[in-house]
Image (cartoon, rainbow, N blue to C red):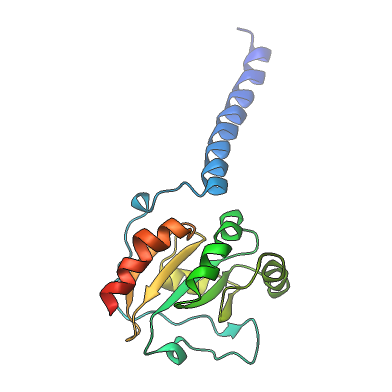
Length: 181
């Protein structure tokens, strides 16, 4: 093979390999098919929930998780740019009828978060802004969406990586809530 052909095929092969890997990753993101079994369980299970970000989406909202102490709370890390986050809104609406659901907008802008909630619905009693991702680091998230169930004492009892669908509520969250009673 001539040097000129080799100089063409090497970058083309690298690009093709990158394209295949990106397609597989995008497919998993769009379909929400990543399995919670693929993400290690949180070391925070059984420990007090870390602090939420300093800034709430609306100033009139309380700035701490402590305001919800005494009842179970689902903390849902989400983002306006996250496709699976859009898909989980109907299930979070159903869950919010029985449990306090609060959102943390991960690495997002307030205007984009407001538009997202206006377009897809707002299942959250409160939304905090994690502009710089530091809260995500404290909570140990791997990506969005990711949710944590907090007991009435403020301890993390469950972590779910991936979108919350009705099947997740039935198979994962409801049994965990039943154990808290």
